[in-house]
Image 1: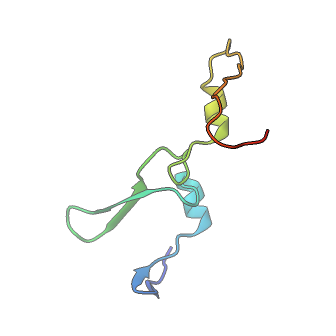
Image 2 (image 1 turned 180 degrees about the horizontal axis):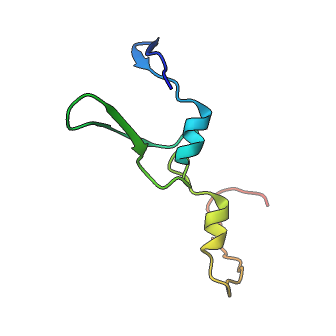
Length: 86
């Protein structure tokens, strides 16, 4: 598989094919770690964080799965802090 280095604004970039990203489990917006191989003849691209996170945010499915099974919703009274009419 080959691709072309292209100019994007003041930077250079490459496009990674969707099939390649899917095979690596990398989603759009994922943070990536870029490394140079020991022989300095290859660029290594790998996920910097677990694949389930996008742009530093957690997936709702993961947050709900981490909730305790006996979790009960309760209301908290924060008091009045302004001139709200409700």
